Length: 110
View 1 (cartoon, rainbow, N blue to C red):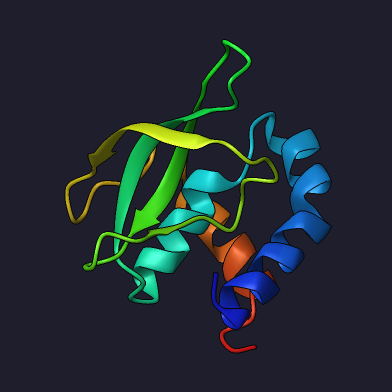
View 2: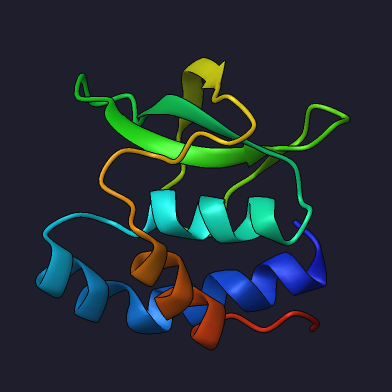
């Protein structure tokens, strides 16, 4: 994880609980849409396997080199069932105002 990604992850975690309480789900889709907007790569849907028998759905960024960028997952797990979204496809439940929320809170450098 780059220094900028570490900074963004810390910023996401600072607002994670507030977001989840308001929306009822995590910020992964909105943050992935923002990172795509900033040129990090393509949005991918996947499951995160925490090796507890209960993988959960998640959105990440897949770079051109195949590296996964994930600044919203506070857990250590394995990414499985990875599928790229179409270039203009938005993650489920994500609205423009959700992306704007994170645009205001995530640094562009670090």
